[in-house]
Image (cartoon, rainbow, N blue to C red):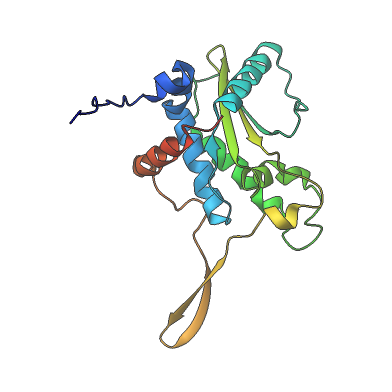
Length: 219
């Protein structure tokens, strides 16, 4: 009887599989924070979670760097890639910075300008960052951040497939569902959760880890 040679299967780390640049993005606190808050709001609006894309992160970082050097804030025309921009300045704080929660909540706040019932298949220019954020058909996201000196921060988020497609809003942008509750025999209705109620920053780690783990194979 001949015994087959035992085969040892090596488990490769994310760095070995995808290169160190992937780990730089996937383990970056700001990127993780942005990813968490994207998916928090997408879940409220019945959209599937976004996965982190290395290629989109690299593109987003290059675009953020370009804007930081040129101060050109116009949206770039990228084929089948949507984008959100965020710029904030402070001339009174040293080493001014922003976190992912602040950025994504700023984009989400544009929901108040979106009408779910009238002209909903037309682009609402004052709500375009919100609609891209919760666009159901978008599957991947990349995040980049750059600073100018010590007082200005630029954040770029890229999405694929792109959102804000004319005629497709009714298939991709959904209102927060109404939760029906019963109290003392009488029926009442209330919105599912308030925009800002959600997990605090310290309670986001488990979802962050799950999202990053699921994102490892996305390019």
